[in-house]
Each structure stands twice: as structure tokens, then as C-alpha cells.
Image (cartoon, rainbow, N blue to C red; front, side):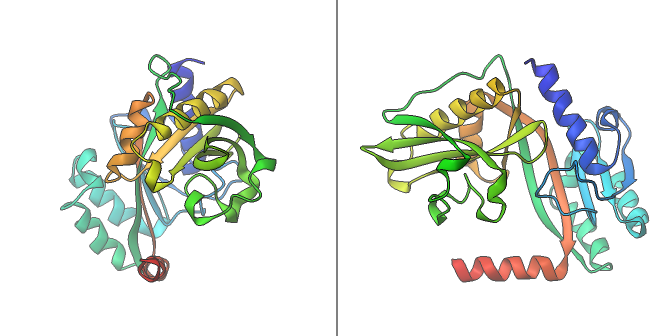
Length: 261
């Protein structure tokens, strides 16, 4: 597996998700397309999009509802691509979307492995490769980044770290689409900063590649600890996404998070 193959796989999947061509992400010109549902998209996406912006660093591809075309075209034409994913410019998009009952919801950076840098890291604890059948008793709050109870059927591969038989760290892969596996990681608080995250992520990424799948990693730009772990393992930034959802959806998410804090 080469870096070119990895990037092209991600581009093709993004094209499926966004209802565009893979080469659209490599253009110097922005592109607007109308979103539509497909069973080949990443399983956790809710399609069609209201408004989803993606950049691989060259331009912006916007997959939207048709009635948003003027507002989104005006926004991505006014500001450089790199600034469309940050404040203060993002407030302009937020104001435009409010007229359609939408709010900016998700923002994330996605990472792909660099084959020349990806290598197995070690930690002071035993690690074990896990399969789907090993996860049944692990759908607990402390492993909510590595595994997803609501989509448990997609959790196909994992690596656990153990201290005397006790699970202290877990990286999991979800089969979000045919060609790619998304990695999530959790380490118990008292075991952090001991190299466990990088050991588990790197071992899981290599295991995914051995199975012919492209691993990818997602983190909020402000999650410094998570981003550091990805970079340490040989992952590098590949693309960014910004999506809008209904105001009701966003408000409900904020309410649930406030109740848990």
C-alpha cells in the first residue's frame, strides 16, 4: 500500500459521500454539488446533507440542499478556502444558514497514515488484537471513542492494552465504508501519558493495512492530545469538514452534553 493509493482511496470515498468527482477536491476552483443519499457513503453520515463543506487543501467542495446554493456560493466565493473553516468568517455562513433553520454543527480534521512514517510503537503493557466478538462486554462509557454501541455491527477490529488482565486502553476500528476503517482511541485517565495511545493506534493502523483497508483518524482541531497521538503514529492531516444541521438537532446535542457535564 502506497501513500498515493491511500490518498486516492480517501478522495474516492469523499466523492461518494459528497456526490461529486474525486478530482473535484484537487481543483483550484470551488465546487458546489447537490447532496443525495447513497448506500456507499460512510455509514455514520446522515444523507442527504443540508450543508457540508470539505477541503483537501486546494479548494472547497460544498454538498448542499439546492435552496442553499446562493448563500453557500456567496460564502465560499468571498473568503479564501482556509478561512471558511474558522471564525470570524464562519459567522457569515452561520448567519446565512440561520434563515433556513440551520446551525453549524460538526467541525473536524481527518488524518491519513504516511506509509513512510507509520511504524509500530510499544508501551509497557501487554497488547492484544481483538475482533468483533470480543467487544460485546466493552460497550461502556470509558470506551465510547473506540467503540460505538449504536453502530456496534461496524466495530470489526481492535487492539487492547492490559495491566495484569485489566483493560486499560482500547483502540477500535469501525468499518464505515467498504475501503476504509476509522480508528478511535480511549485510555483510562490514570494510564495516560505512558505511550499507550500511540502503541494501540499504530498497531491497529498496521493491522488494518495488512487486511487491505485504509485506516483514517478523526479529531477536533482543538483536541491537542488526540492530534498529537495521531501525528506521533505517522498520521498526517488530509482533509477537513464542516457541516450544518437543523437548529433543533444542534440544540438537542448541546442540551444532552450539558446534562452529562
